[in-house]
Length: 487
Image (cartoon, rainbow, N blue to C red; front, top):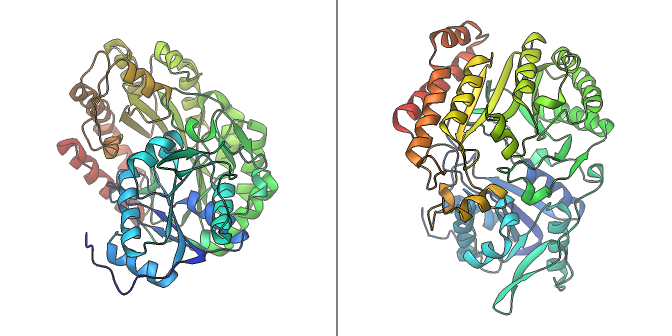
């Protein structure tokens, strides 16, 4: 990474804002999902409504270099650079903010995202290159902060921020969640790059598709112990008006020529009647296909048949474990019987891809018998895909507090090591070492994907040259991961 500035330091323009997604160490992996930074697009549209000029730099898609950043700062002269980071990318966001300070020392840096929301005071203490921190939902908070900075006003009254004051960190009161999601402008998709990228938008769908993400709701009312969404949204869930969703879909088709939609909700079918009305909207929208994530206890055979008729080609269920005991311990709120029924109903409805997401080490008390129950559930149902990750104790989760109390996390684990694939965990559970957790992950994945019947079935289902290319790349990436443990 070069440290050489290009040209004289720009004079920051308080009416210009640059929003940045920092680099991800696995951004080139064909095994993982790579989606566009919709959170930045939402922030951008709210800033535009407040009168700012906005640009987005997505360094998960673009190769990052300090020369590229310097050129952006020269061209845009932003008064504020806003960064959004997860736990694994908070370090790269801080390094990027350091570069901003070197290249344009008077530019204000603001950090947001799930890690910052979970550990606001600690984040500002650890990373001095961030001037301000936005907690929780950022649209209203960031716009208000930028307006105050533009006017030279005080920041003590802005709810939802943390900042440096008197040699310490000041935490303002939290901001209430946006009650009416339809009061927010549609995300600024014109600022996003729609060229093909590595991997897939969702497992099974090549990124050669013209795919686009849409949120029809925010949040989840179920407090699973491992889920970091609680740090941002708590246990709330808010729904958008289907009429507004129809308008947004129309814009996506007309302006971005989207032909596949990823419904990015945590649980699309929480309200089955509302989900059914959105299915009909998707059918009329002009797209070819769509997929969603949901829960096994919020679907019915009738709803799944309607979803398929309206273009749904994939549904992914968060299952985590085949152990009834652990499903209860995690607060998952589902049963094994519901998993079995939902998967069979989805297959009977004709949905092309049915995915199950599982976690090895999902609770510190997990035993070998619990894991064998998970293995049987993976092998005994007609999944198209399974995703088996090793547990990650993310900040802001009850699971992390439980593991810290039990002394199961090594001291001083770098934030970039908090990833579900590609690195050896620096934590363990009560009954399994890090090495044993990884071995179970490989064993479960191998016993599912390397079955001759599965391989032949997927090859027979390939429908185009693009799909053949996707499956070839994904297959080689899987074999590399299985052989080396690296993405």
